[in-house]
Length: 354
Image 1: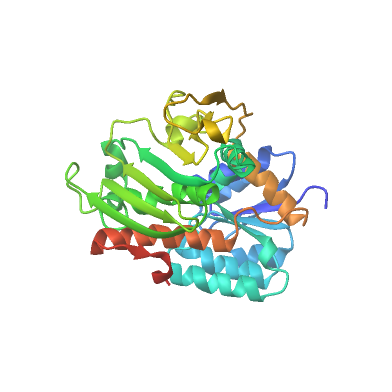
Image 2: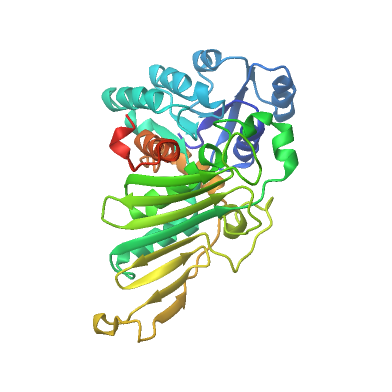
């Protein structure tokens, strides 16, 4: 299989972006568009590909070698299970499910059905960012020693029309914890290891919505490291992934800002400025002595394009999924643990989120 044929299921905002990327890619061909709404027929005609109203119709047609599920969250698991039934490789947009319970049911099938585990990729696209990959490489070389602490932030200001356009964003389930935090949880798990417990406090004092606008989170990692995270959608700040990574040109960006700082026993790395500070020798480790300082170089690439290229290799069985169903489930479990910690005011252990 030289160029896999990929169909996109769901022609909403995210789906349209996937359709464009697949159509522009040299690594694959756009096989079809699947969507029940009439407007998607015109979209399929525009791209010159077949249109199907349902995923079953596509799967029965035999026209695709893989599918991208860019549908509403509550459809992810039922549609992924259909793909498993048809032995169809799938890229499942994040979150992998709208509930932990449903994600667990998908994980159970994916791990028991022979040959299925390596055909499902979850769309946490930041894992394909050269910034994240290079940071992990630096940590794994031991340049900063053993990780002991991490700080992250996602602080930005969502304009009023963001909430006017979708009033559900002012209600429970529509705040930055469930909409935005899951991206950063995936990043921090990838860089620092599994998160085993969380504490958190939230406030809605500024916007006065039913849902939170600002959250402070403590994180405990399995390797003994501790972390903090500040999240706010009402902060006039540039300290978020979108505004620092320079990967999504729709956002204003600030190359002097960082959204993560990871410190180890021998040094630290700030992300995404990639400023590395470390002690050259163990005997130099002291706050009285200066660090060796470097600006780590990297070649920026669009992580969505990199994710699509990886999915093509997954379809061809050349690579295993970088972000598995289990990863998607763990990101969801940590996010739900933060919600639970806000509600109860207690430390929530991830094992408690079944």
